[in-house]
Amino acid sequence: MTTKAPIKIVKRALWRPGWHQLDQPLGIGQFSRFAFFTPAHSSLGSPRPTPSSKASDPASKASDPASKASAPASIAPAKQAERGGASWNEEADLNQEVGCGPLDFQFFNRTISETHQPLFRFARVLEILHPVLGPLERVDTSGLDYVFKPVGSDEIFVNAEEEPGVAYDFDQPISDWSLLVTLDDVSEPQADAIV
Image 1: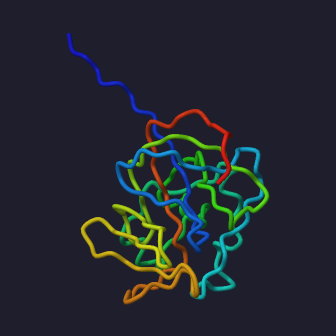
Image 2 (image 1 turned 45 degrees about the horizontal axis):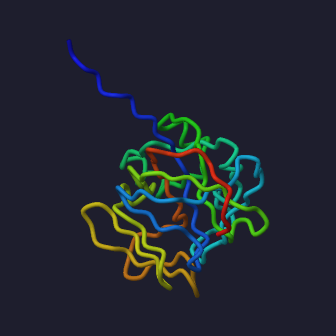
Image 3 (image 1 turned 180 degrees about the vertical axis):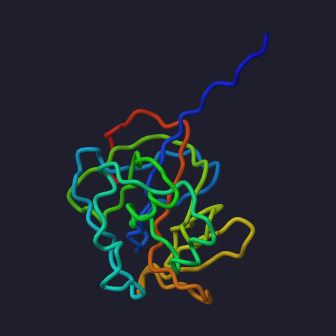
């Protein structure tokens, strides 16, 4: 008689930077209390535009990720090069390319919504993905510059104050720093504190 391993239920969340030290840090294996938008919150809007963003960027026209938007589990490198870098906000196009389901949550930050209170959940970070950089080990949001650490690569320092979204000494243009985060051990929501 063999024993089967329990089935893991994972959740997927969108992390969209608001910059200015308003975002939650992330790291693989991190078990923390995270703040998320409430499910009833239906108009999250877009993160602040970055100097490298274009007015015609499809990301600025994206629908609300909290209302079960879709994001890819992964993007083939050939498709990344062909598209000049993808964005999680280009939902319909990416869904056709890789096929994926809806997001479960969106990480909370005050830049996107100054009027709504978050719901808190305990969760463990299993994976952090960027559509251009690929898998990340961590994102440090504690300083004037955010630090994005791709797996097997050097840290990327990104301005979070004066020119939010502009990377230092990094040749690849990135207009969207949003991340797809896979979570495990997600608790029930709690609304007992203010961020």
